Length: 244
Image 1 (cartoon, rainbow, N blue to C red):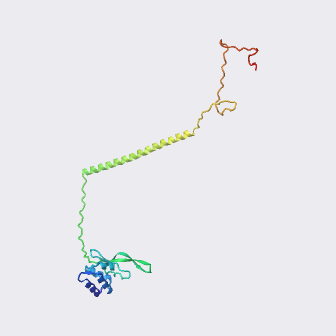
Image 2: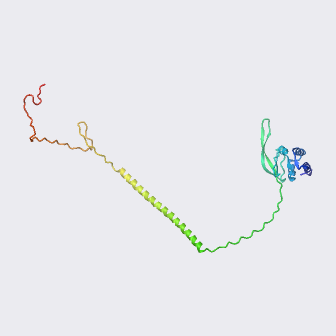
């Protein structure tokens, strides 16, 4: 940074250690870049006025850290000057009448580097060796009881699995037998009740019908005291010889 530009900035800071809108405008009109103005102001813990922040797109937080977004036509800060890109802003500029273009501009924050003195940390003390304690009878008994209980639980689970498998096989066998019996029943010929035939003069008996035997009429016994013998005479008025 030219010492002449630095002196002008420091002169503007005299009195209240603050840069107003008009003071920054005079410095930029003199050809001093915003990066140089912000750098001197940050090193002197100066304050940037609210009007200047709005006019030149500068932001200063409560801790005094200063950031700014230069316009697209302005030169960015030089590498190694203490500025870092910490964000971006979108700006619109007229290009043709009735139209505008949108440009994304980076935001720079002044972060001066500080020298850090590195000292070698003392060596950590060696960790004490782990002492292996002999197992006592109580510890051994407790471990054996835990192992025995775990093994018993595993054996019970395995036995339950075997029982379930046996029950499943038995069930499947019963189902298979039942299905076989049902299939055998379906294959047997169905016995149909044979109807009795009724013989008439119009219809013949059904084929395969069981025929009933005719019942012989029982003759009337005429050799009884109550029997009345018919009178066979040729006299008039008897039989069918009835005059009409």
